[in-house]
Image: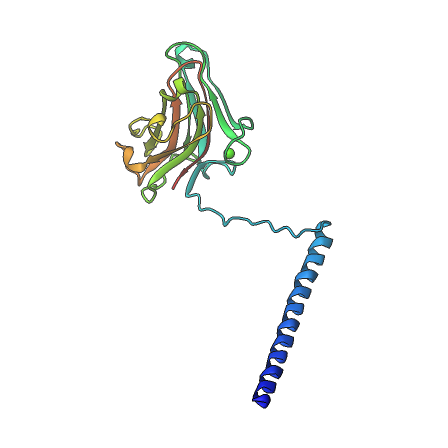
Length: 223
Ligand SMILES: [Ca+2]
């Protein structure tokens, strides 16, 4: 019994010593890392910045990174009908946009029947198309007043600049719930009718059908 007890006692001592050594080693390494971090940061705390994995954005139509290669932004307003022109700024830095630092600001001129809109068109060096049939949703952010929201429509166009346009989809039916704040809009591709999504010339057009109205758009993409 005594001998057994002694053997067990030695074993426990050995195990305890080993555990103590391991703990000391771990503490030393943690402490060393802490000292290194502290000397790098000039602080007493170790700070680790966690960066999320890049999100696959899909087909980006408009973002801080730009518009698709071979495309251009076209705008329209009531000026051909002698109505006051609209105002457009595709690099607007106000309004604290949800993506990056820039968004697209549009203001329609005054007058009943006035309107203002813009879109992205695959027109360089000549009209061409993109196959968007592999994407299921159009997503973008919008900021607009309540009265203007009911007159804000999205469309796409097929083929060429003279090709057929889809139906007009009103933004307020697809996720818009609050005025004058950034709202993410999601429109299922199946909501668009009248165009062949394997041959899209304009992947995004947006128009306010109202005078004296302002709206902002950001991060337009097909996902
Ligand atoms: Ca942006």
